[in-house]
Amino acid sequence: MLTVHHLNNSRSQRILWLLEELNAEYQIKCYQRDTQTNLAPPELEAIHVLGKSPVITQGSQTIIESGAIIDFILRHYDADRTLIPEAGTEQHEQYLQWLHYAEGSAALPLMLKLYTSRLADGGAELKVRINDEMQRHLGYLDQALDGVDWLVDNKISGADIQISFIAEIAPLLYSPEALPNLASFRDRCHARPAYRRALELGGVYAYGPRD
Image (cartoon, rainbow, N blue to C red):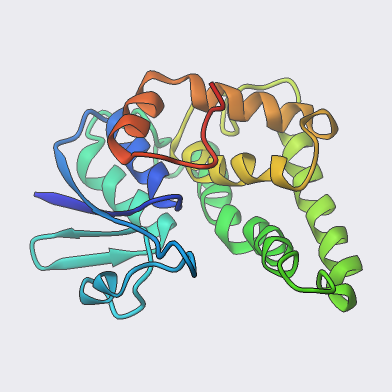
């Protein structure tokens, strides 16, 4: 059986959401961050040497990286292709682009902003470059969501689930009014019944709905 090694307040929450959208059979093994350092516990290193989440296991296989995990799950559990466009189509190419864009480009400036904000000087030397990159990527996403509910062919896909984490941490850095389309996208994600079920299963999640 597929096991999700789930760390609280982490990107693994979206993997639970994906599996709930598919009504897949799986189990969760939960891990808690250190209350002082906010780091993952060493027990995760027993699953994979990097000690990061998300990570899934199935039989002898151990898979890390959100994009690879989403791809694996959709190939093995989405027989009706409800969350992935047909291979060889233009929509499938767009899907792959968004799937990898989330962690390959969009996440980096946001995470740098969060990390440097904890420094005494707020990362003064990098601040201008980080802010410029954040505005560029968040603006790009907001524009891409103008007039549509979902990123690929206006149908929800694994790419939207991957991008959801970016939409969830954006309010920590910008007011929702500055990115109205991204804010509406986040609200649509949070309103999905499968998302709500995943939230109940995963426990406290700092970036989820406020209600």
